[in-house]
Length: 483
Image 1 (cartoon, rainbow, N blue to C red):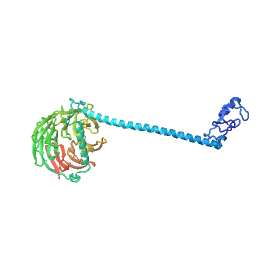
Image 2: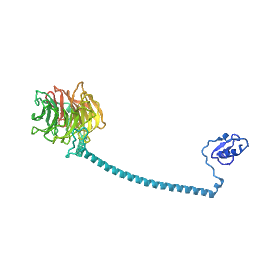
Image 3: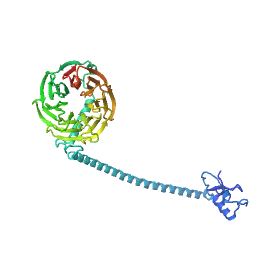
Image 4: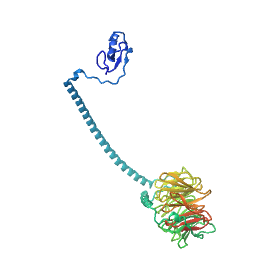
């Protein structure tokens, strides 16, 4: 039941009640009456606007006038409503058409913008690569450019091929790979102590020829580099030329060429067949502490106590790039290329592991966590793991995808880590130092432990498919282990 104004007999829009007569009025009408007469219209008693009481009601539906109940009036009302609906529909169609046109225009502009962005990005990338061959790099001793024969795009193409091959190999474990239960049965099968001089004892580094693991390369405290044939058990070449001990050696994977580095500040390139030094790379002003060969086989990465890392051409002996982290200002203790060749890691004397982008010559990641100088780093063949050792008697494993330490292998107190190496399949990790330990990756459980050396173990390496394990130490001996 709706309220009805006592004056107009219609449903009021703003109803109020008079406390004098208790009648309901339209506020607009009663206020006008009070203004003219000052009394209640129903009983004539005095009444003011302040006495009126508003009534809170939901919006009422006003009844139609009696004249609107006739058939012609109803038809007219329906016609008016139909016309209103049609006009509203027409307006909506117009708005829809306009919106469609605007959306079509916006999509066209978006597509055109994407094409322009893609073209500009391509041009910027090309310009940066071209500029990278010309601009001086931060920390360079002298402005050097990448060689014309191997621009940055060449390194990128090589890295793409290496990544594809590595991922293909990583899908399956080689059938010839020695199983963990067989590896745990390895014993020493040979030991050779006559490779280097006894007057200054100690083998400080070693490497195996990747294409023929019977050929072993060692560097000694006697300043000599020795190439040894495991199968024939004889020395192939003794390379002399360094003026101080040899601390890093690398065997070229496809050429009869080896590389060595020394605290005499030089890196030497040797011909095994000729038995002579073919290049001397003078990239540093202090002891060279680390050496790594790029996947192309044409360039060397080196680190030094002079706080610089250098990228050099082995054919010409020319230093292409030389960079330091000026903010850190500490000596570099080791260096190693990632298997793909576009990034590499360096260890520092203040316990940091730094990851660098070769093309941009920039430090892209840092791994803190060790205490004491970093002594060795090694990238796994799977491309995701990095193993590092330092003078804190521990080996840390880092995930390059998540940039974090996911495993720490705590070794005995005062254990000195001197060498870390993954096998070619990335299944095993060998640690050389106070003794020799081999861990199986993923589980990171120890499967092998040898204490045959009477001095520190300075180098360890796996043969093909882990068919044998070799080691060298400060006791001047080169040892081999297998079933």
